[in-house]
Length: 515
Image (cartoon, rainbow, N blue to C red):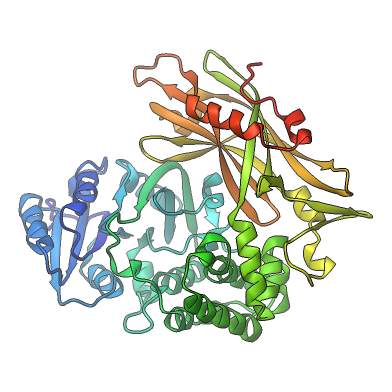
């Protein structure tokens, strides 16, 4: 049990485990190092019929550590049942779901639990770091202690790796769907939790959860999805929303999340081009049908321009044009330049600018009257779908510090602007600028030791793309003054790229100069 049998644990960590072998060591290490005392939490590992030595490995750990427990079940083939079994065995006031190949920050359980009890939360989401996989970004821009689906981008975070009040799970019978369809089981459970939660908190000032992709290609969710099964599960997630949210702006915005992430993102760029044509055709047919059958006009209408165009092509069954767009987008990237930087003591001042490129050319817009129209590589797109006037004004350029050793990401405070640069042919492109002054010693709540790589994050017209800057900031563990180093490889690469960009951009670029 839990070492201190006089009181239930504060937190139960529920871990579904299947053939994870030694990979589970990093998670176990992070549990044994938690700042929350061992007597105040437990970990319930549910061995889903592993065929390797996972079961024996977990039994040995449980024998050595009383607050680690193991439940063995017959193989179910999917994480849903192990998680549900784990909840049934959990004794904690709160339940934290963790996968067997991920791990926690040392202070994660203590900070999440303190946030939950201070704010009487039903759900608490801790900042995530991705290791070979994407994690939400905008959600973790700041702490949010009364987040809802209306006032925060909660819908961007639908994995189950969160802390839930156990009584809340029981009250609403919130469990993971078992049986078929199996895909997106966490979406169906988590979105219902958001809709029922009286208070949801987002803890963004500490990296609680490290989310990784297995490098051996294992894990049941790594298998290429069957489009019919996958989109049947997606329809069930939409059913959850429709059962709780009336038609209108909020429902459209929630539906838009699945249209953007699970539908259109599979029909664009390299992801589409590298998949088999037969599989892409199946996905395109499913996407077409869902757009036509399930979505109100406001769902696609609220997308940024690039995604509006893709939704239109998908709804019109224009698969060849989707491929043409994908080839163009596969070459698209953000290019960034350092105009100046200066480090004075612990204060770093930085000015950068960035723009979008495809095929070594800036992404062009036509300057027609009082509006800007995107020039996509396909014909027959109505001007109202290509109108990027508002999207250009609302674009932003962030500066992000990424910790080299831990992959933690921190937004740095910036001021940003956008300007249009006209070309000789009646077209133009957008250049985004950002300036920043930050006390390096305060970054990441003062947890700065190590090396931080700087990059820009450009959000414009439906794209969110990172571009590395040729600067790294090294912060010594002993409190010595920080140092800014120029990355020689990136500097050489930057000079090589500069030789190939158009003259008007070269005139703008002042990369690498000190202020």
